[in-house]
Length: 85
Image (cartoon, rainbow, N blue to C red; front, side):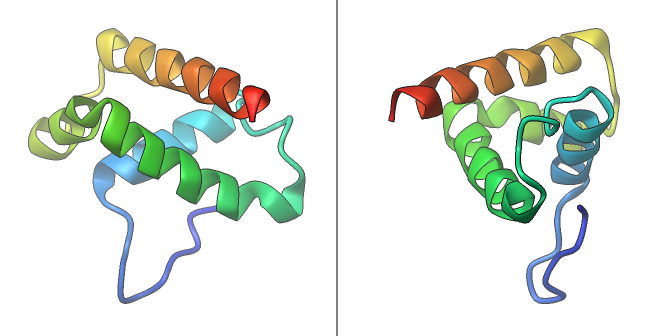
């Protein structure tokens, strides 16, 4: 899941978001072979839709309920948007 190119490693924030998604069941609906593209697409979405999540995690390294709630909301929005396509 955290497999990444050595030339473009995941930031701390990206790693946290990926692990959060996995540990909280957000990837259960995704076929195993589609997890990597899903993660890449979601990280691009969250970077453009709510960049403060990643900025805050990368700058402070602090994990809190507010950040978790923002990640949950981003997953729900992303899922809704992708179901419409």
